[in-house]
Length: 366
Image (tube, rainbow, N blue to C red; front, side):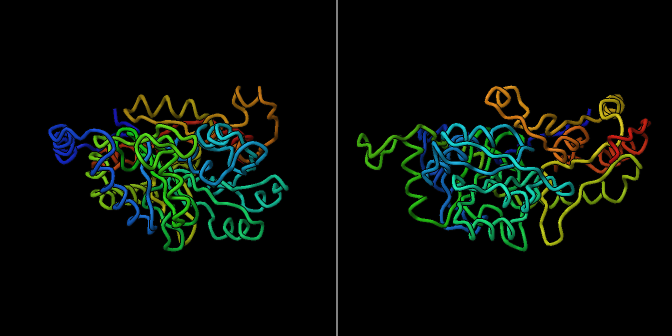
């Protein structure tokens, strides 16, 4: 079976972990500091703050900007649930607006229409590795005095008009095991604001600047040196991994020709890093998945149910029509695109997709 995701772990990661174990310095230490400096350089920012995972990155970013009860944050309904949940965790209210049908990212016009006096921030997601429309979103934020918090969990190395994601506002990254680079678990927050950076460092460590003295309520969201050691080894391979993902996506762009498979669209001027190569199935998606699995190709759906339609959000009173998100969530299918694929596997995936036998649904084909 050709897996939809495969962590790329080599001797560099193994040796890095062993070196930390032998050092005896296992908690947040020199490996974390080294990862933070290297990550900031990749994102073109002054500060990077390592944390325990991508969800804690989003939550701490909101807290660092004093976003909480009574505040609203506009975001996308088409993402992993952590995007919305981090806003709830901070005590604020997520406001979901529909997405652009081509990019799967926030529609800036709908964002601006949803702004109220309670709006404090916009949280775009760079879904599947493609940057959101940051020029438009940043202009909206500036007009209305709003904070930009980028959910860049899937987009390390991506760029919009030559500018790295994570540098437009307060950037939040995930280093989960299946991300483009990983540390097993882990997260990173990027910013050019020294005051926000200082507050983030305090928030991740119980509000403490001096050991056993605590300035305000904080949390234990630190990264270990074991995780950072893996992250450092991975970050050194980022460009190679990214180029391979882009090349794999280009191969699929050229070779997938099935009339009921709509290939992903990349906005002009962006560097899409293809955390996922997500097609749209204009027919029976479950049948497509069954046929591909029978052919030895693993697939996945990211994401089958919009966040505000999840049971927990229904229980909170969310009940809104999101026609583009609803349509896309019934069509999207991720194919393997990770850098561990060889040429034979790439050709087999393309051939299996082109061989699909599907009935066309008039509703799904819109």
